[in-house]
Image (cartoon, rainbow, N blue to C red):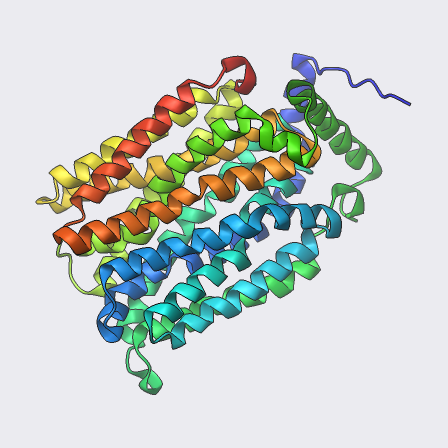
Length: 440
């Protein structure tokens, strides 16, 4: 039997936009998922703070750090698509729990690193363990929210990235300074141990708080479950009509998927250029000890948190995606350039670093809201993982390149210039997307 799904009228869409059902779902899911992502991102990037002391203690070079930071994404690339396909079989609850518990144990293991090889291996394993978490949650949200609400919901979830920086930067700085010497351990060792604990606890809590689909939750009525199912199926039918491709192999052949992968590659270069090198860039402004570096580093993340939510809401309200992605890319480009030219002034340099962080992290929202507008089913699960993993190789190139450049020249400026160029390319690639494909 074939079910015909009628397109909603404008009045129906406005009704959906004010629906108490989606507000209820958002309040039930998003705070917990944000906590999980804060813990995830903190464990992914706390190496940027540990670097301030760890490199001297272990005798590691800037190039070793940059390569190790980037190797995370090789593990990510190899295991992300399989992880998302497994999630479709076993469910989000068990998959996300497994991912979080495993990466928390690996993250804690960094406290015992002594050699470059150990550092490389653990960074690779951390990427392999965490593979599937971000695209898995994006896929999970698509089960609960129709396309016209998705950018706003993703903006709330992705807001966990700058929140991790806002909270984690000052906390990491304080741990480095205050915990140093406790139990004969260095501050950076305590940093890895302490910041792994929330991921472990939240990973176990996933088994209690998450449900695999709207149909399995006790806190939605039968009418609410039917409404969500109808709205999500309508959006999936529209996406399926645009792509007409639902298999894994067809997704790999889809040129739109590879176009988005190039855009995400540029976004990842920008985002992880900020994540892994921001503490170092702030330290170069001579703002004080590690604790003060943490306080200053929280400023760009705060700017990013504000911009992410403003742009996500505006994009959904106006049903416009291209310029809402291109403008953050341009903001990142000019922010990175300005941080070089104004590094003699702490206020101006911090303003530019804030613009760079705000633009880079805001780009993440639209980068992962757009694919769900033209992919559905297995194609969406595969496409999201492929885009995030292959595009995420920009996260390998960015820290590796900056580390190599700093080792060779003693300066980070040239590496930052390349990241600014990637942001400009991302804006141009975004504007090349067909309006009829993404502006809805």
